[in-house]
Amino acid sequence: MYIAIAQINCTVGDIAGNAAKILVAVKQAQQAGAALIITPELALSGYPPADLLLRETFCQLCQHALIQLAQSIDDITLIVGHPSFDENKLYNAASIIHKGQIQHTYHKRILNKSPFFNETYYFDAGTQPYLFELEGVTFGIDICADFWLGHLPAETDHPQPDIVLVLNASAYHINKQVSRYQTTHQFIKHTGISVIHTNLIGGQDELVFDGASFAMNGQGELTHQLDEFVETIELIEIQNKQPVKGKLMPTQSPVASIYQALCLGVHDYVRKNGFPGVLLGLSGGVDSALALSIAVDALGADQIRTVMMPTRYTADMSLEDANEMVKLLGVKHIECNIEPLFDLYLKKIAEDFHISPDPADFNTMPENIQARIRGTLLMALSNYTGSMVLTTGNKSEMAVGYCTLYGDMAGGFAVLKDISKTLVYQLCEYRNQIQRVIPERIIRRAPSAELRLNQTDQDNLPAYEILDGIIEAYVEKNLTPAEIIALHYDEADVTKVIQLIHSNEYKRRQSPPGIRITHCDFGTAWRYPIVSHSGTWATLTAE
Ligand SMILES: Nc1ncnc2c1ncn2[C@@H]1O[C@H](COP(=O)(O)OP(=O)(O)OC[C@H]2O[C@@H]([n+]3cccc(C(=O)O)c3)[C@H](O)[C@@H]2O)[C@@H](O)[C@H]1O
Ligand SMILES: Nc1ncnc2c1ncn2[C@@H]1O[C@H](COP(=O)(O)OP(=O)(O)OP(=O)(O)O)[C@@H](O)[C@H]1O
Ligand SMILES: NC(=O)CC[C@H](N)C(=O)O
Image 1 (cartoon, rainbow, N blue to C red):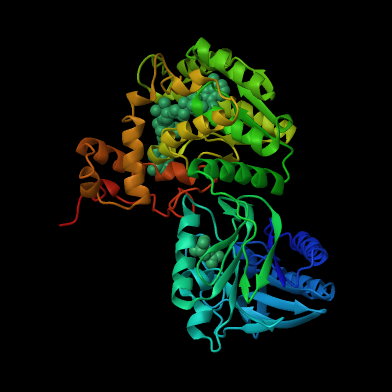
Image 2 (cartoon, protein in one colour):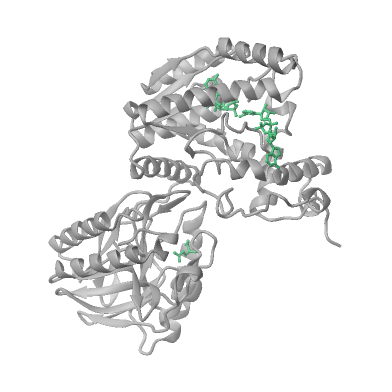
């Protein structure tokens, strides 16, 4: 017997499109000789549908689409994920369909409470396991957290299944696949039951689903490993009630996976929202260079336009490097000198507000005016062309507020929002190893916002290795200040960074969404109040 895994890219809200995609996968699997095909979790609605589930019409449309889909299924058995209303309760469900009939609808029993999915808010929990037999093999069904948090079929079912089929919408973050392997190994070690995982792929707002579906036999051996970040329909051969060895895609380095996650995140945000392309400010610095290479890899050079907007503070090498990069990548590029506009602003402010700071002083007003002129011009081009502005700020800057409201923060989607500055450099090196697209000088030179004379980022911030180490320890590992200092960071740096993190919550709330690649991004995972009196508690350590 052959089982097909449909590792498909569903779109939240596109019920008809998702149903059509599922049908294409069904036909392909049937032609290849599969007896059974499994989709990811909530494939029909897309995942996570969030408050769309509170709209009765949305749930009804899903139900209609399910019935229509069932009518198109003949000899193959389809297991499809969908929201399901039953006796005034809403379930995260999977229906088993054969010969035009819905044979059974299974309800997810363990709901995911994480801030990304918040399933306990939307769904009722199922109570009943479900086993079914096909060609002499007994299958159990889990929906995502059922398996990852509960190991359900084997613990509660008598008789036990030969194979557990898991419909996943499991979101990517660094090293996620390692933890998936560990949980699946543990399950098999205790039960001896084979497992087949089908995972969603695709970007949905800040989340990226990586696919990377896999199967393990009853001895805990990996028998199938599908591609990361790519749609694919793969057949799994079953012999003696177990998967036998098939396609095993090699594991990629974490940096390669992150780069691909960013490309898929950008691609799907832009395409699923219907933009004809993207724009970005290209400064000759490393962040906009990386953002550009990701945009080109995600969308193709013909969909991208870059704008270099120099002022008196822009070094010649910034102009040279930006020019070299656009030639290497073949994107449309505009040079637009904003010095006259900057000058006009300063004059107007001096005349009417009677304020004239020396731009050479440490005063953020003239610095931010430059960033805001750039933001205004990019948004003007966006309004006229319909292309969306990609913002280029990284996680280190987002953490401490080293960015300008309505300036470099103006735009639709923040590609690098969860990428620390140190990781920005690693990603640039990784991309250049494949093919040189980022001039080396962009990677080597000291980072500078070029908003005042001889400015470098380190005038305001600790060295990035230190800053990023403290951010990771505080944000992602949730360590106390004392624990961070014990990692050999300077107490003054730790205090400053933690205070900056909290006092810049207001800025992050106004920033565009960005792609999550860590356990704790500055998106849904980070829910701190803006008014928080952090000065009185954030850097204290409880006795
Ligand atoms: N709690 C709160 N709730 C609501 N609003 C609050 C607020 N606290 C301040 N504000 C407002 O925010 C304003 C300050 O924010 P904002 O105007 O953005 O500016 P600000 O944070 O003062 O300055 C931006 C800094 O980022 C640097 N920068 C800018 C651009 C790019 C880069 C880079 O390297 O990529 C670096 C720049 O050199 C400067 O040091 C205040 O004037 C106030 O109006
Ligand atoms: N001269 C410029 N021309 C076009 N865009 C610019 C220019 N300067 C800054 N920007 C835009 O504003 C963003 C913030 O950049 P800035 O130079 O202030 O800081 P950065 O963190 O060093 O970024 P980068 O490494 O890309 O320079 C840039 O990534 C770019 O998109
Ligand atoms: N959809 C879900 O139940 C998510 C489960 C799991 N925590 C994951 O993201 O991998």
